[in-house]
Length: 338
Length: 108
Ligand SMILES: [Zn+2]
Image 1 (cartoon, each protein chain N blue to C red):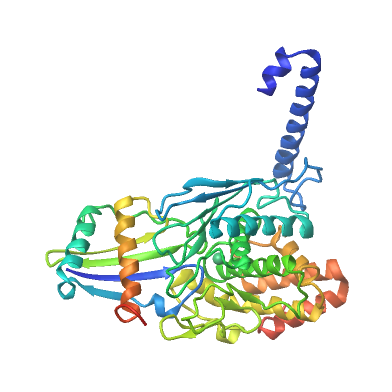
Image 2 (cartoon, each protein chain N blue to C red):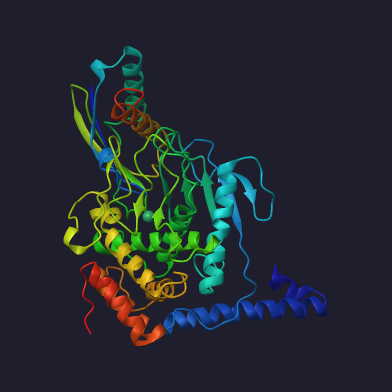
């Protein structure tokens, strides 16, 4: 289209089209060059055009076909459907968090559109990220409420997209548990940021409000006290460990990714509490830079990740920052060395 | 017909929900047994190829179904989202039925 205008339009049109094409190509070239050179920094230092969210919410109509029917697009007003509105607002809060706090332009830092499907499946009691979009069930109504109810769960799912774009941690074993933990960390920070909570005011829970009143439990997970979130006759007991001494070896759940994530979750909590103030400013910043750190491998272990957080802490906040982070990892049984 | 059903993974681990559930169709009301039999037949459970292994999607579940119909038995594992509509139907039915069984029949 632009190329056609550039060759056939009026002189003024031509000039504008050519300018746009030139910018586009500069960006593309810069990206390609950057990828070729594989420089230390993850992104070229470019000023991208204005940063705007592009949300679309779909309704699966209780089928399991994605994405479903479009029910709310960016800028359109709230309707009567609670799930649709919660998903729309949650995507917005997550986008704003990453944009305002870490200067990140959406999931891929290049303005990726945010898509979510609600009313997925019949009494479907789960939410997941399919590599392109978020998917939310309504819950079974007996144990689980709708899965859009917790902002930290929405933040959790979108952060899987961020991790998939940055560190690409494999979803297995310790790397998988790190992948899970990073989603919990930033999911919780999205909520804390939206509610302007300090580390002392935050509940450090993932999925508060998701259980119906029939369940004996407060949330899916607790970063403050892993293993304490629920103890119910039907659901069973929360088995998350807080330290390496409790690391669970299992073939289920891709090697216990949602269980062993309790260990790095708790390390983050301890570090954030020690720094004080707003968790996204210091502990969150260190974790975010580590997620983008080129040295972080897709198959990283807890210890390899921990060492990088200590190094990033030193770079960002000096020796005392490093000391705080090292002490947090030590508390969960991981030594980062000197 | 006897069916074993297991759910693995999801946004959180619930030890109670990860336990396999057994369904003995002979013990079900005739209408329910007929419906399950129809879903198994429509999904072509004994004929479909083994689903290909794929990289797991974050927080998505995998469903393992083992069916013994007296003549043959087979075990298949499906990671969601499941491509085939008829297989999705079977899994959804088993998922809801497993929920009912865990709650001790109906209410808790
Ligand atoms: Zn997750």
